[in-house]
Image 1 (tube, rainbow, N blue to C red):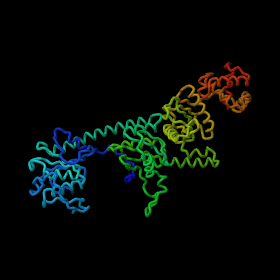
Image 2 (image 1 turned 90 degrees about the vertical axis):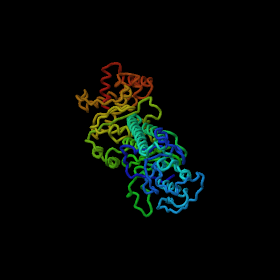
Image 3 (image 1 turned 90 degrees about the horizontal axis):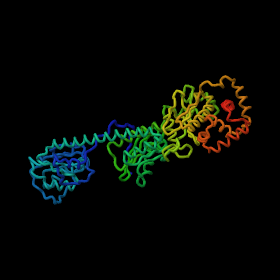
Length: 554
């Protein structure tokens, strides 16, 4: 790979840089009537600006990328003779690197010597092309100049008498303005499509797909250890995936922690770059650190690099940072402290203040909707690293980084001040607001709300917390009555839960089967078994009411 280029700060420009103009586009302008008579003509030649100079040595006045326009006023009388185009002239290597690595043009010697030195200085300065104007000094382009441009690989354009240099410069700026407008339009459309992708039910894969499509290449998300978590776009050439994974080490904190340059400062004290670029053959590579150093990295591999590509990739990096990163300063350290204290036996009520809520919390249970397109929705508990990213994205949408990816459900602990809203692609069950000491009860509430939401095909169901009949009965008496009534079902959790769900869904066999993920015949068998053990007529509404009251105490 080539030398890696890094940027210490992620500063996404508001607009992309002005794109250069292809030389072929300038030659296609019929009003200019320009004609290329020497040098290469491949479509990759571009012009960054036009500059007029009659200096015999233009090297000190060029920045690189110019179309240099000259009428040949600087050509000495001795060199105005036409040298044969096929002449092979010896060029003395008299100039050192500090002078541009090319001989200065001199009026002494043959015409070929002068033009060879003149063209070599333009090439050494990075000039993109040379435009030679006919009239008033020269009627034709000197043959020695044509030969020198061919030798040094500099495109040479013949500018006809009716075309002014100011007209050529104006055409260059017009083409640049058109290209800039087109690039701004491309960037704006890409920003809009990326933002729309981030709001989809599968935000991370959608953003990667949209980014790969907009850049015409390959996009990937890498974890803190460099592992590729998700990818989209064209399959890259051999070695590109490995090169991208290697390049992510430049911007990953974990990789830099073990990096030490001999004789230099420790890695931890050196600024960590937030982006880096490289090339592998014809493929352009770029990586972008996501968030405030959590270790996630966006990788991009494209066959070409357009002026607006960095802006588009930076927008994607910001969106992915929001989907995968921390949401509050110091939140990670506070959660680590809370976890350690819980493991060491500290009661939840004493740990909760570290999590930053006002003391009241909601528990949310979530499952992806049925009928999801393969790979387009999170699949909790399948072991796919992408599941954790999808769960984190759900947490971000609900306003909390406290996410648990369980075997068949995602659980999120949300501060009570942030009211959960339906999320596209997810079915949610939400508990009543509770204090830390009631977290287990809230977890049960959320699970039951989720089951009801799935059975009724509702995107979100909240646990009802309004005053009920049970509030009129002392809790101890209610629990004692429930234990006595439900004693025949003691130890048979599946029967009790089936009865609870069946009663909550008004005796619907189909919806109960959906909520419990079992066959409807299984539901019928369990309910019949409950009726036999309880010796009760479950079609009697009074019996149902009494059983429902008892089950709510459990």
